[in-house]
Length: 311
Image 1: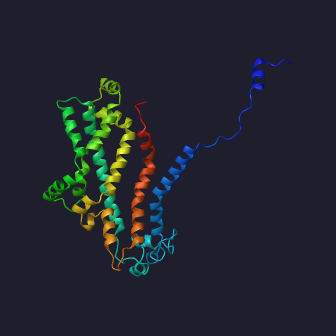
Image 2: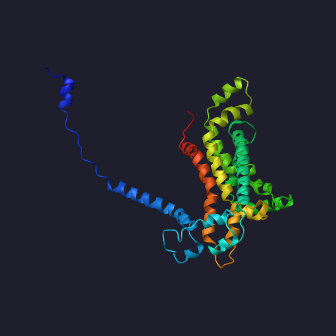
Image 3: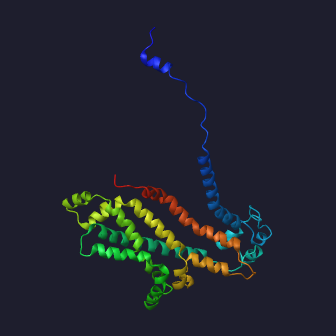
């Protein structure tokens, strides 16, 4: 039976090289460096976990151990108010009561209010700078962006005097007001994305009778969900981790946020040393909302980093 030309070409093809390629030395070194970098980055978090599950009295005697010293959940029980004062002192705790749930609620209120207000007003301002035509727009935007070069510590004292004169010390509004309206970075970030949206989309909607506000809320905002999610997460993390400003204007326990409460908890040392296990347990629980938030919208953030336009 005659063999076709295609079959003969397949039979005459030289055998494939089945040898495994050797990993280049440069790539191997890069992987080793990356692995070491990951380990160095994650080690503090592991040490926090190790300390949180340890007995405070046993930490000094087992300071070099990589495993928890006398494994116990006592630190979490102290932080959540589930242990008695005698039990807390027996495990090396301060014995002082910690109103953790109140501080957690205050942090949630402050961070959520700041994020919603800042993202909303910054989106409106960014759209005005990107799309609306009005005299002096570009000059005003340049002057607005120059505020990025002003260190926040320079505006801390004027803001404090203003909040004090308004009688807003020890209130939620006093804590969130400086970051509630807008920040230069947020406006710049969203404006750059809005500039990349084709104007034809908005013009088509306006021809159908949609106004500026309807175009913004029904077209621009849905198309900008990725950068808005990114900005929301960055704003929430910054507000959640803020320490100095809430310490200045929110000293009352009724509005004390978690970051300030952790500092107060560390300073309570009736037994001569801080309750390190309790402090690490409280820090771990305080970080959980941020981890959950990042898990929920992390994919949108990754997508927004590499966007190149509207598809």
